[in-house]
Image (tube, rainbow, N blue to C red):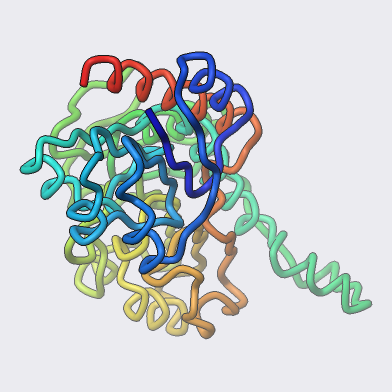
Length: 298
């Protein structure tokens, strides 16, 4: 059995595969190269950098498993793979804590102007009176998408003294104190809105939804690019309707919306939600174990 790992895997994950007698190749391929290389592999393991479209699946004549080290599988044509009898594995909960912490980090960055004052000081300025922020304690956090990551974000926010309300089309109960309400109510009542939903065909938050929000609202998106309409967000930032945004994900990656990512009211990171030592190890071990199990049963 041979596994192609295109976007890296922790050493413990590699050890699990090797001890199971599986040959491991760590190599990133460009799209056209991947189509040519895939026929010799029984499994391909990707993260967000590599796409597995129909052409790759058709070329993978030996493919028994497609694996994604992480939660989202939107970079894999998993529905088509299913028609070919090829399961898609992922690790939906392994990086949850890291993503939740990043969402909170963006809230702090915006509340205390960390993004702007850091740059200002590096330019030799001392603008102490310019950066009058606010405390997160006492603010209402609206969580859109109350799965594992949403609930962990809520838990951390509650620890900071925030009030948390949330909405989810499926999840109606939580192990932490989320005040479940409608989507419309979250838009109207939240001081800060944090997105924790899967990739969608159309933006969940656009001009219509932003218009319903409080004046001076803050929006955090560490979920998927495109769930917040970037043009509508930029317009709202420029008008002051939205006071600030914390973004880790973008419609195009690497991000190319220069006006948005360099906006002074925006805190940005380059899709690093799962990029912690702990998350990478949890993801690597879990996905390796799932691959071994799946290949044994194939």
